[in-house]
Length: 205
Image 1 (cartoon, rainbow, N blue to C red):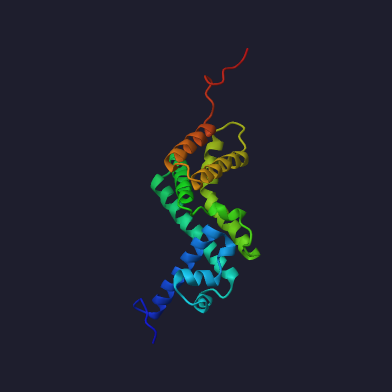
Image 2 (image 1 turned 180 degrees about the vertical axis):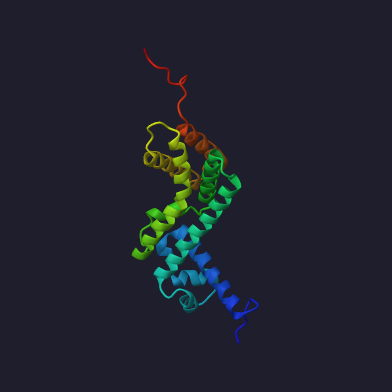
């Protein structure tokens, strides 16, 4: 019987599968879908290529697993941050922005996958679902602000705020200081979502 590194064969297989997926995810973020091949993942994991096929029978399935894992990691981080923030709208906005930019700085931003080519068609559809689920809390937070702004279009505000957050993520991905970019992004988005005071916009006679 082959040597196993866990108490049971089932646990051993799950541990190996987890290593395969983790390495596939890292290759996806470094090299894009073209870099996620059974041979490359096998090399990174220290397995024979045939062993990778035991877990994921096609390259498309391997890429799909990498995408799923990337979004699961991000969703877990975002959910934890929002739980800690509680129900305060401002705290939730800060938590979402901060976590999103932390992921970007660490090279784990799921947003990067939206522009990737080479993801199988079935994977593209799933990618959109995962992206929408991850963005849902942000949409809900911006919607709270929109409800307090007379005449505001929530969809427009979400688009503008998302564009700002995506731009900030690109900055930290290219080496801009995470703390500075995060603070500036929170200030910028928060200010844009606050009702203008009469003092700031005096009526003209």
